[in-house]
Length: 409
Picture 1 (cartoon, rainbow, N blue to C red):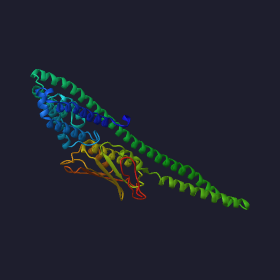
Picture 2: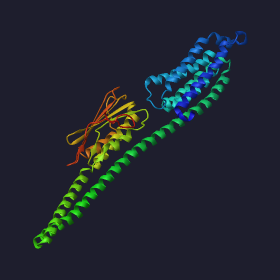
Picture 3: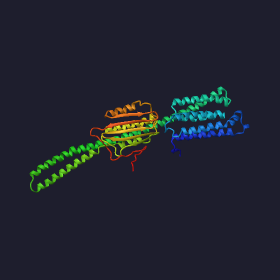
Picture 4: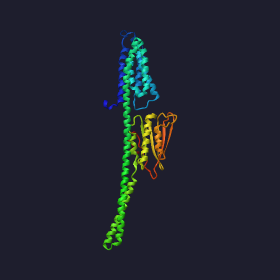
């Protein structure tokens, strides 16, 4: 069963289990007879409702924050909830007059690298350890030196757990980078295979035209001469040979034409692997059922632009959904990309956008970017086709979802 759970779910379950176990000593403190408790224990029993409130708040906050851990974007509400999570852990120690809250702070430290930038996580943990010192002094009757020493001990534990969570986060990011590179590699390999196929068909068509066509033309000319020189039964056989030569030459020309007509790159097979298993982002692609491009160089530009759009949506926009619409307009290909990310006041061109503009400009294309706060990003690409090039589609279709393309019924 454990093998079917990923590391994020295991981390969530482990934290919730620790939170539940912490409830047992809290129950013992609040349910024990007053005569069995010291002065601090009696105060804890009298203040049981705030203790249990803090305990419940911690569990609910942790459960909400760790849902889809590493697979969804973290918003401002989640960041505020992280602060509430840490405060509820301190509140458990404060109201129960125990060190149980420090144990829960270690649970908080484990998930902080997934929820906050590193510097913010470290600052929050340091602040929590400073705040916990007066709790030890007041609730556990520690001297200031003993409280600082106890807090320093938990700092070591908390720091170790935080670094462990940070390493796990970095490993997850490395796996995501590897997945992205593998998807780009599959897409590039598909484009290369299509280019090789097109080049081979072109070479075969050229060889058929240059070699067989030349020899068959020469054969027809010689048979034409032979038909004027021959007489009697021989002339009939020469006439039949001449007819067969002309038919064979016509068949070769037709075969060459068919080979050249089918020398287009299938962009569906090239682009669809990019939308597979993108974490924290659903990529919805819509394109013609038969999306064929004649020019390999322009197909490569379209592939690289699509890669860059998906990468930007994952890394910068904080989007959960990215829609990509490929359409044909006369002698050009149009791509409309929209995400539901946080957007920005204005679009600042970085290396990615500048690289896309440069690729498109080399072939007479253009890129337009629109954005607004909380309205995501909209990118409109236009890629003119090569002179004499074309995009062919039999019927409109949809390649929707994350991993597979489905055609309309």
